[in-house]
Length: 387
Image (cartoon, rainbow, N blue to C red; front, side, top):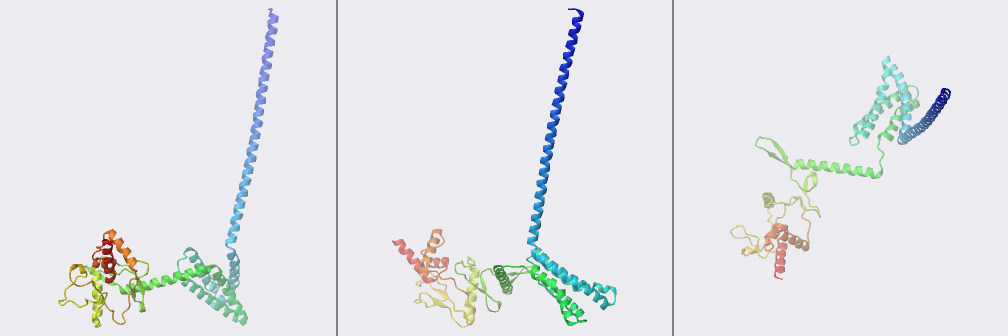
């Protein structure tokens, strides 16, 4: 190959390389433009989505605010109707009282008179409302008394001011001065309750009054326990009681409920028995004997006889019931139990091992029943064992 041919070949090669480089650069530029266009489209789409999200969020916020406003207006419809009336009442009465106060006191300080006649009753009225909403369990009687007292002062002051011109002016000014606070107390400060709620409230008040009376009576009946160091405390007898005449407490037994106070405290039972026997002796009445009266002759030597015929004493079981003195408050007796109920209780006690079914005295003490029933239960149990 000649030098000219080689030169032409080199030029052709260089020209081809330049064309390929130009084509590659063009491809790069095309790719860059496509990527930029795609990025712009993505950015525009993201901005559009963000704008829609912002619009939706603003719409939700606006709807939530409108809903809250409607709910607030619905809950405070009465307040929105009453407070304008109260504001009108104050606006009409306060300037008139300020002018009159300046004339009465003869100085500029008289313009402060509405602070007593108008603001005074409104201070108590708002206090009633706040107390009932924050602390519904607290009484507001004294606050309501304050509302009434300051309302009377406002009415009297406005009435006297109006009477300086004409009597009807005085009546109108007096009524207008207390109209706002009156409407406020009737609609907002007074809780609106149903008939059922009012009935329940009356019952609760009656229960509270009775509990108070019972506690006072319990304090009167309590005994004092003095310690060795001289300190004292009141001791109460637990149980069920009813209020008798002049606030006295009397023991009560409620049918269907277990008798309160049953225990093995024999010292207390003996003290109660001696107290009843002492009361019977003081009136000259002997205790009455129930049950089998065939062997009712008292023992000659005044000894203590066992109450169970199984002890070979020759006498059957007896139960003494002292007759209470005349005009002594009657204590309710245990609700009557049928013989079948006593038999069922005996069977339960026998299974528990807390009673000797062959001893009438053990049955009487365990079931706290009469002597006759105790003997019948013992005999029935023996007959059942024989069968």
